[in-house]
Image 1 (cartoon, rainbow, N blue to C red):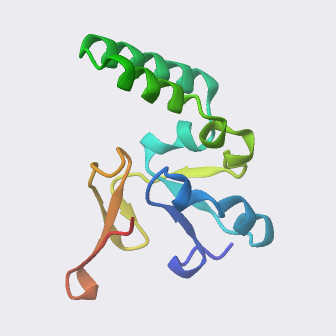
Image 2 (image 1 turned 30 degrees about the horizontal axis):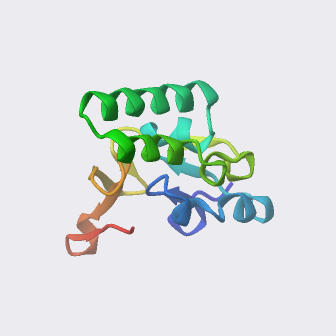
Image 3 (image 1 turned 180 degrees about the vertical axis):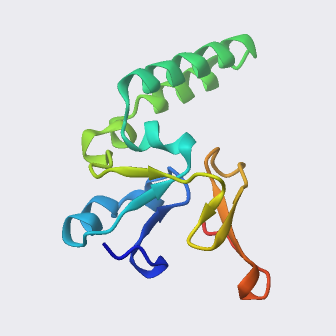
Length: 132
């Protein structure tokens, strides 16, 4: 299997606008999929993880006194557009380990998403690539 950087799918965040075509791409091309370890349960739409996440935010919003706005956010977490089985990544997902992938240093930059990463390449004149 060719695992050069030009033949690999790397998920830089779990947001749907970044992962929407992964299943289509890997159904026609035999390429590995890589993701941050914190993203894999979300990308696989793990039901236990999803329940735990919804309960965590429900309690947080209640404890912080968010009221109706917090209730709406919890409803959004249950949104079938986000949680739908058709949004689940069906291929095997390889975990990015040791913050290295194909000669790039992988930098964790949570903020836009908790699993967001950037790629730093010394051989590329020190360029930092972060896509979102």
